Image (cartoon, rainbow, N blue to C red; front, top):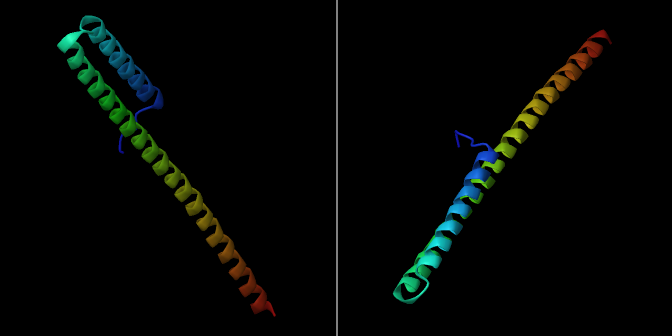
Length: 104
């Protein structure tokens, strides 16, 4: 993911989507809760619910993937820095031993 959407924007978008879904379902329920209109409404409400759950699932998966990538990057940076420090310490130790060996 080259572009990171701040969490507050994605949370706001989710909240607005959920509110719109609830409002739409409520409006259709009020208008046609009987007969064929009610059956169509039930189908629409079910599809709306399925669509909302699918979108929520995709958002959660994207958030988890992003968190995983950020954790990998942090680990890579930590171990990369540690590896450089270990290499410097090893080199300093080898140099010190070599100098002691030459003096003896």
